Amino acid sequence: MARLLCIGTMQENFRVKGKKLYLGFVDLEKAFDRVPRDVKSWAMSKLGVEEWLVSAVMCENSRQNSLW
Image (cartoon, rainbow, N blue to C red; front, side, top):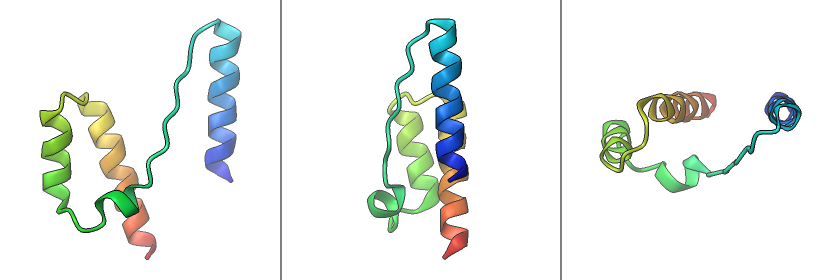
């Protein structure tokens, strides 16, 4: 629920500023549940994903794994 509120807030902030906002949703648990953490990070970096985004994905992925 908190994530939806965060997304709504981001949408409103971008709309007010007249900027475009692109969102993408990936089920990382399904996509990467058997791929080692260091391989995921390396692959994203190798593909040119910016470091801040790699860090955010890895942080979110580790939070999901800790819930189970």
